[in-house]
View 1 (cartoon, rainbow, N blue to C red):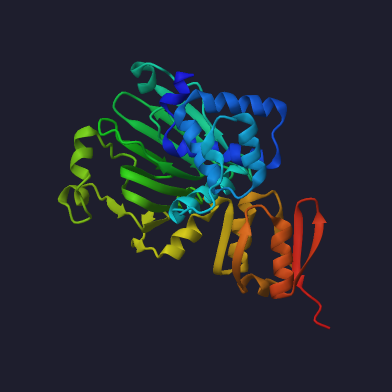
View 2: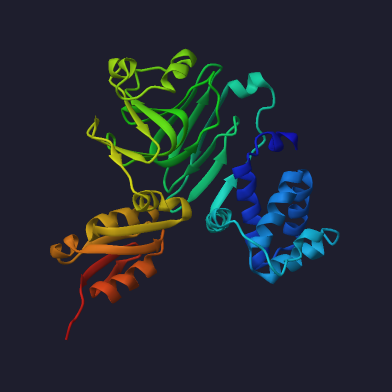
Length: 358
């Protein structure tokens, strides 16, 4: 039991609480009620998180369920007037949305420092699946569809290999053990960071940093604890960074690596960040992408493949917000907004063509 508590960060607890709130909204089975009561009683932080979220969840079914399970808890009575912190509320409902399709993996972790220092495991997701995992050091990893991640922790280094797919890394601070994600022929070393790495092909990569900064290097560059302390205050103009041909990407910036070459770093708007990271809420956002690009992105989340009966369709511009993997919603939107009809050619093949304008 203590193993779970030790590595349950605030984010992980909130994610679990969100999952339970969502489950209560649909109705708990007898077994789920017992599991939920056990989870709440494990840790006061669990109890506080679930009751705080319940106050923001505008469904009597949830409050009634909590009242029946915990009759002595007074704080679940919804006050008539209450000021709500909307930044918290936004994160809560994002977490609730994520909880509806993401499994949060909390395991029986190694308990001694020696065991934790030597930890290795492979994490994977299937096509259309997304998952969140809490690593032994409390780092939170969220994997997107069809991803494969190898984790190897040693006494002096935390090294991960993203063999395919995409991941978000909320890195726990440990100056004695630098945290590096290797993907393709590049390495991404966290310098106090939350960041997202997407591997599109063997040498095509995308990096988005939302907190702190990340250093991009060749995999042959090994960052040790002494290097890490110096690099935390480094920039792209620092001699030590230039010497190893590295690039520093800071919060709110994006780096594209095409054919092993790091393109000029781009400063992102808030809309850019939301679009690039919408998958973390189970959504896809398009804002002027070509239909061919949009279909390529949609195909990452489903076994369905698309064929264009008319090549001219490929350049049509697409805009909208879609739930990842919702093929029916996408096809309806294309029909309504672009007069594009579809025909199923098999279980997993959809042909798109211009609609009849008569």
